[in-house]
Length: 426
Image (cartoon, rainbow, N blue to C red):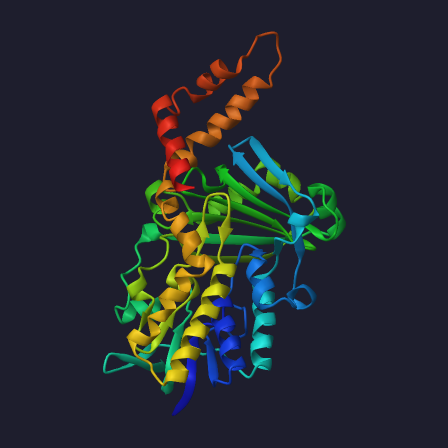
């Protein structure tokens, strides 16, 4: 059996659904194919969405979208096995609407409903096995025994880029370019969350945790407060568990049992456990983002950003979906599907915040591969503060105490080199 659409989109994440919505608004016949049994069932996300792109494209989200809490507090933890140093930023009301915590499953369902209202056909439980390739042009997709033809195909398959890899449309992803994220969700009543984190019912906390959460491996932990839950997780680069001989389930359990985290989770109970791949290599080179008959968007294109202080994905996904939609709308009006016409996608991306920000932080992945950031430095910070805050009749001056904390962990040369690396990369 075969059918024909103007546009076929593989993947019903934020990028694919955004593209579908804007294409349908222009009258194109669009189908979105999602492997999961229902929208959002395969989405796993730490829990935070930045609002700037929603303000531009979906301003009604403040009334409609499934917002859990508006982020009021930013927290950064440096952790050892038995201690932690917390750096917290608390902002005024102007900062309150910059981002919110949310379950990506619910957010995707909201976005999917908007796409369907615009005329998009969303088919769930459909596994796309391959792309239809005729005369070196993508003409649609193959799902089981069915062929679905389309003038344009948008690949929004996420971090696990099987379609692109199977047809050699991009370089194979290396283990060191991918991280594995494991998330746990704990139910805790709203009042206790408010009390423990010092917020009211509309306000939330977003935390990044370095050191012990990944057992000193390249990676880290995250913590977000929802309305009645706390989401907690660990992300570790895929080559690290084998190299360090650690097991992910043990890492997550050790993190959960840390004295600080254990206290925050007291009286809660786990309601969800999930895992997901995260690309950390940066974006694909431009030549792999488009071709005859197709475009690549969202996580599949590498549009994710981790600066060590800020982790983003959804806002970049939405923006790439909008730029892909605009590219196809223009090409459709010209009646062209060729690579040269679709190359305007790159120009649009360059004029968007995506390329500006990814270019600004293009050295971040390399800098964040420095193992001292996850092993020695959290220990130095904790030991220094433990010593400097101890009062027992022995004087402790800042510089000498700091050098003592660095001893046998970080050399002065490494400290200078890493400081310069941070300045240049972040």
